[in-house]
Length: 258
Ligand SMILES: Nc1nc2c(ncn2[C@@H]2O[C@H](COP(=O)(O)OP(=O)(O)OP(=O)(O)O)[C@@H](O)[C@H]2O)c(=O)[nH]1
Ligand SMILES: [Mg+2]
Image (cartoon, rainbow, N blue to C red; front, side, top):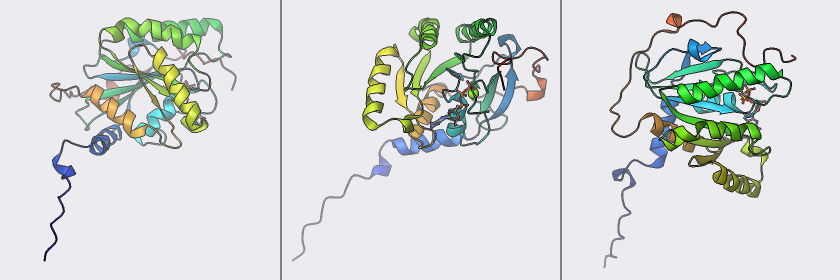
């Protein structure tokens, strides 16, 4: 006598693309990142038609490290233990060579105590201008070290971007260095940040443990490829065609002690 055959499990590969394969696509796309240009001021940035995603946050929060982790490149963005490592607006192109379909922006951090007040104010204006007026800006990633929580400067930034977020600009708060938190501290930090994020999403992230990597990568891919966008990738000017930062126009931490 033959035993009744067991019902076959549903074939996973026939269903909609899994979260895993979406993450593989997103990480492959992020890995194409290459340096595009650097600028000390908004008006030195090239006008672009592709979606731009900006990383902002306090100095030392881990913006540059996060970009390197997402793109799986060790030194694409300059990261350092010393606050103030990033002093210019740095743009990285994504997508196939010659068919850039998005740009990541690494911005200098704010809140570094050793920076002279005048430089701080000037930088806050540059950044506020960028966040308010950059027309191809598609999303903002606010990097926040949950051990310090959201600071007054983070709150000011939230106020600056709120009108654009209400109009549909994507917004994500990344709680960095999650490897430094216990599980319960992480959960608590998440729920507090969700209350503060005002319509944005919140994720825990660790560059060392790669916590949140696939999730954040997939989110950024989705931002840059909204349904119905139809692959609007455009050829971009080569780096050489873009004005180079003039001498003397340094970023906010130029006079910080070495
Ligand atoms: N443990 C741990 N350290 C991290 C993580 N991400 C960044 N760091 C460390 O934090 C320090 C600052 O990182 P950066 O990426 O340079 O920070 P930033 O936000 O770009 O800083 P600025 O350029 O000054 O604005 C470095 O020593 C990194 O190694 C993380 O997920 N876990
Ligand atoms: Mg940096």
